[in-house]
Amino acid sequence: MTQTNLSLVQADEKAYNLTLTGASDPIDITDATVKMTIKRSLSDATPTLEKTVTSHTDAVNGKTTITLTTTDTNIEVGNYYYDVQISGGSLSKTTILKGKLVITWQTTEG
Figure 1 (tube, one colour):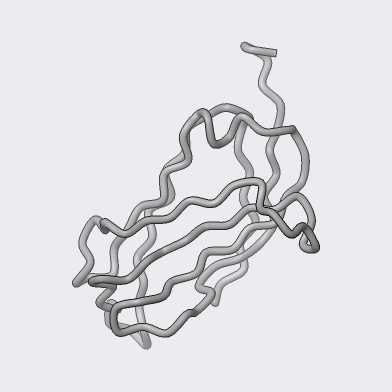
Figure 2: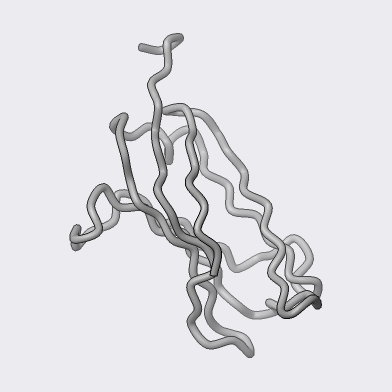
């Protein structure tokens, strides 16, 4: 699992292209679900945002994209926590990425 901090501008679209690999080979994610969960606080019972991906860019070679739309990212400016988990297909539930997410302000739309 990798820990990476992310930052994006409020109400901007952002696509995260992921390639899942084992020791050095891609992991086949056919029939797997990739889910990104974003919370304001780790103790929040309800996520601020969840994105689920079941249709992958190139499943056999472990490639998928999580796209956050302008509606998804039109949330309060501030610090959040996120993780990305994969499960299903031939894979057990595994957190593959996590970290802090900072939503920064925008000037254009105020």
